[in-house]
Amino acid sequence: MESTILISKTENSKFLKISVNIWFTVVVFGQFLFALYILGLYGVSGIAGDFERWNEASAHGYVEKDILGNIVFGIHIALAAIITIGGPLQLIKKVRSRFPKFHRINGRIYIGTAFLISIAGLYLTWIRDAVGGLPGGIFITINGVLIIVCAFYTAKFAIERNLKVHRKWAICLFLAMSGVWFFRVFLMLWLTIHQAPVGFDMNTFQGPALNMLYTFSYILPVILATFYFKAKQSQSGKPRLIISIFILILTCCIAVGTFSATMGMWLPRL
Image 1 (cartoon, rainbow, N blue to C red):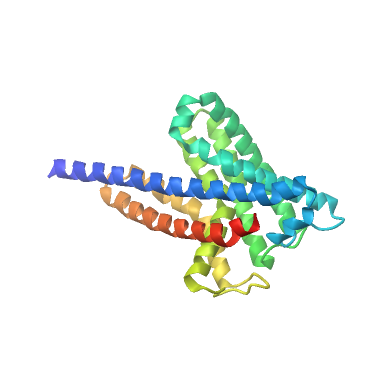
Image 2: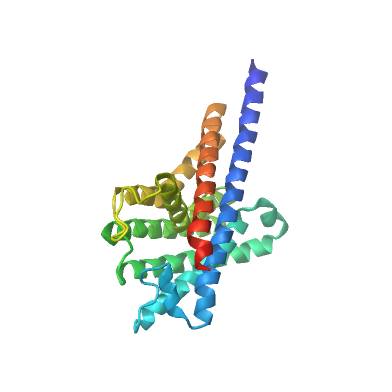
């Protein structure tokens, strides 16, 4: 009986590891596509001096005569490309073990970028008109605060050499930093399912459906990470099995949303 329980725990641990690896692969691939989109749309048009093209995907990307705001937006977009590429590398175990110096340097860049991109995002949200009005501004602010908090503790525990806790906060930071990407993916999943903007107004970009997607994209990933940590450390195999199944379902949703975003938003604008 005892050996059966141990086998069950081991199997569930392997299942959890496989589920997380599949999720991570799908997310990294999707974020790589998003990074190409950012560089292709904003980077190429910015280098060419065609700044008005920024407004194809962002309502207030380029505002005439708002020099400071345009600079902040450009920096924000450039930093988004950096974190989208550099973030996943911090979580890959083989990269950490084989290239520790790169991990430390990239980590400092990533954490520094986290603070800068949050400040830039808050500036664009409240100084310029927030996308989605007040509700959108509030959720984006919550996401910005989460990023700052996670970045602080990720750095703190790295300095203290408490690597076990440091890695947990690093995962939370990655999830918080991915909030904007998650929102785009889940929005396209929502539109794919309903084939229409159900639950929100496309003109004002407000509505209960968007509030749900904001919550699911900006807040819940960090909360769900705590359930993952608890399931991983649980003496029972049942929590691992439950969280593994949930991760696989979530991965399927992300895969569909990524495909829809790529075909519906990213590729057409390149």
